[in-house]
Every structure is written in structure tokens, then in C-alpha cells.
Image 1: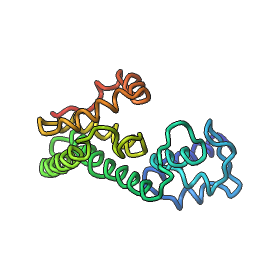
Image 2: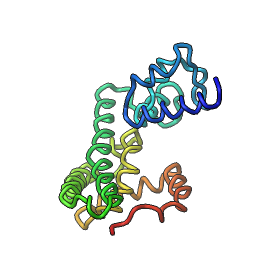
Image 3: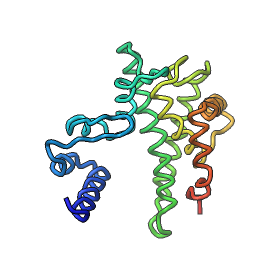
Length: 203
């Protein structure tokens, strides 16, 4: 394959991921496609197509490359609750946070103040629910760190930047502090520090 064709293929696959167009990725990759990375040794096309999203990647690694932390409990009922809370943080904290940030990037005439206020309401509602869940301390699923905490960490970190925790959210704040003190998350924050200044601010 020529370098131009290879570059075109990469661009097509990237565009397909952005638009969630699985069919395009399936068509672009040959049936004998193989993918190798530090965590994947020569996986085939069907396997590659099953692990493109963050939560799925974490579950894949948890299942095939288990470490001291189990991100998905072996107990079926607990596993469902863990996945539910992962979705909760993605859909009801991360998504409204992104809507607020996205609005900051819009041109002055295209801003959506009504949409921003709705997003802030959803964040405050989510904070109130997390406040109750975190009354006993610990992690999202209780005593063990899990997939749900992986979703909560960035969602709450940036959520607090666009809709700061209030006095009624002391448990939420304490939970974020526990997350930020975890060595892996602390390392990510330190590495990202030089770019925090680029985070869109309210105009």
C-alpha cells in the first residue's frame, strides 16, 4: 500500500470513529486485518471492532489482562450496577459538562444560553444524587475502586469547573478529592497541568 493510500485509509477510519460509522470501518479493514499494541497481540478484525470505546476498552483489559484492581466485579448483579453507574457518570455528568464547554466554543451569535441552563440543571440534579450515594464515603460501588470510578473522575473534575460544587455537595467534593489522591489519577492530572490553561472559559 502506498503512503498516500495508507494516509487516506487512516483518515477514513478516524472519520468513521467520529461519526460512529462501524460499517465504514468494517469495509475499510481487510478480513485478514491484525492489530498489535502493548496490550493486544495480533488480534483479529472482529476482536478489534469490539473494543473502540473507553468503557469497553477498560472491560476488555479487565477480562484479558487482570491486575490487582478488578474494574468489573465477578458477581453478575454487582457487575450490572457497576456498568449502570459508569453510564450514569458519562450521560448525566460528563455529557452536560461537555454541552456547557461546547457552548463556550461557539461564535457569539450561535450560543445557546437555554441549553446551557438545562445542562447546569442536569448537573445539579446529578450532584444531589451522588451526594446521597457518597454519604458513607468510599468509591462509587462502595469499598472497591471500579469502572464506575474511572467514569466519575474526569466527569466530576471538569463538572466542578463548569458548575462548581456547592455547600450542599460536601460528599461529592470529598469523593473527587479521594479520586484525585489516587496515584493513577494524580499522575494524569500532573501530566495534563500544562494544558489546563487551554480549557475554555466563560466569555
